[in-house]
Length: 325
Image (cartoon, rainbow, N blue to C red; front, side, top):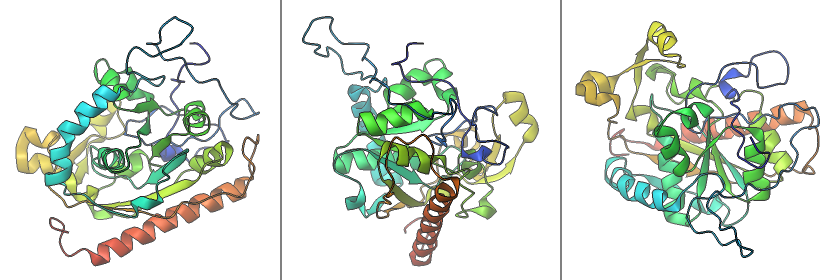
C-alpha cells in the first residue's frame, strides 16, 4: 500500500484499554461505527506527518483539477447528499433531534469530536454527522474499525459516506494536515454492547488515545453528550455463542426484535434525541511530540469522560419523557 493512502491496518478500539503495554495492535478489531481509540502505535517515534493522499479521480494534467467528487479518503459529496436526503426524515420526524451548544463546534480547522455511544446498531453517529453537516455545512469524518471497509459493497458505501479506518496516521492527517472534523466514540463496542439496565453509564475511555492524538495534531477535543440513543435500540440479552460463530463483538437480542420481529433488526424506536455540545478542551502542549506524559493523557481523558457523564445526568434530570423529550 502506498504511504500516502489511507491506512487500513485495523487497530483495537477503546474497549481494549486493559491490556499490557502501550501498543494497540494486540487484539482483533471489533465492529462499530466511529468507535476508535487512536492511541499512537509503533514505531516508538510516534505519528509522523504524512503527505495528503492523492485523490483517485484527479486529472493527469498539470492543473491537477479534480474531475470527480471522491476525495482522498473515499468520501463522495454526491453520496453524502443522497445520504442526507434519505436520513433527513428520520432525523427530523423520527428522532426529532434537538441540539444545544452547536456554536462550540469550530467553524474552521481540525477538531476531534468525542461522544458517548449507544444502541445495538449505533444510532448516534449518523445523527451527529447529519446535524453538523446540515446545520454548520462542515463535513464530518467518522473513524471506525477496518471491518466496515473490508465488507463488499457495504465497505464502499461506508467509505463514500465519510467512514475512515481507525488508524492513528489517518486521524493525524485528517486533523492536522486536512483540518477536518473527526468523530470518535472512545467507549467503543463496550458502549453499544451494554445492556439496557446500564444505560447512560459511560464505560471507561481506554488509555486515552484520543487525547494523545489531539495533542499531537494540535487540535481541541469537543465533548458531545447524546440522550435518546440508548432507548432507540436497547439490548435485553446477548448471545456469546452466536457472537463467536459470527466473529463479532456481541450478538444482541433487542427490544426492537421482540416488538417488530425480523424488522426490529434494523428498525429503531422513535426515541427523542437531545445532543449537547460542550465547550472545547484545549491542551497547552506543543504538537508533534514523540511522547506525551501518560499521567497527563489519562487525567485529561478522565476529565473529558466526567464532563460528558455529568452532562448526561443533567439532561436526564430535565427529560420528562423518553419519546417526547
